[in-house]
Length: 255
Image (tube, rainbow, N blue to C red; front, side, top):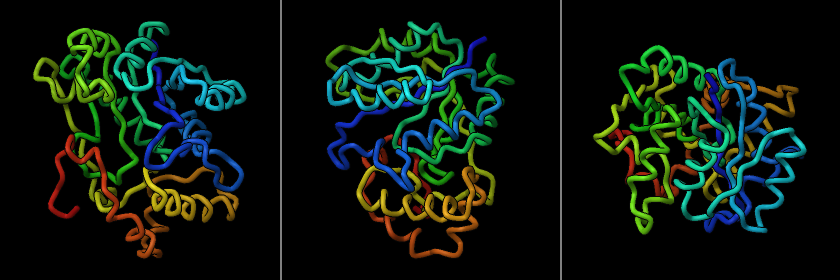
């Protein structure tokens, strides 16, 4: 059984162009994410899913430099891009990540994957991101590749929602979904560890720099939260940014 993680990444973001290759302490954000996912005990391989556009060539070059496979597909039809990748690489279990989340925690990823493997006869889709309970940027979606390949064929080619991927499983009654909520200490839906805006980048830059300057090449979500307890100003720094994905999630009252 092949368990493959994909990272959706492109440079054409309208809110913060080139964000996945922006550097902190001399390293692109996408590289941080790749190195963190590589610490997973359950992921067999990683594939970057980028576009066929010439502007995304630097992402391909970074993938080659790091020894990571790269698949190129449509820019706007992300559903087709990911379904095509899963077919080409003959993936069995898909672990879906987005390049907006460079601080992916591999231990949390393994917990989600492990839960799916244990309950795969019961669920078609397991995620910790259907309802916002973990800090944003810690989302992990796990499901059989065959389910997304099937779902892609059912979505009309002119459907604007083809720019999204996992919602075609999580929001479709055809598939059995399970949302895993954060344990008490990790229940911080008020913290945003994603990079969608300039303020997000400034916030994450300070978080990453704090650990790198102290010689910590890897740091967990628990350590990040311990640090942010001492820096409430950073937590507030990007709390009021508009999040376009809110329409797809259940938000608790404390967000």
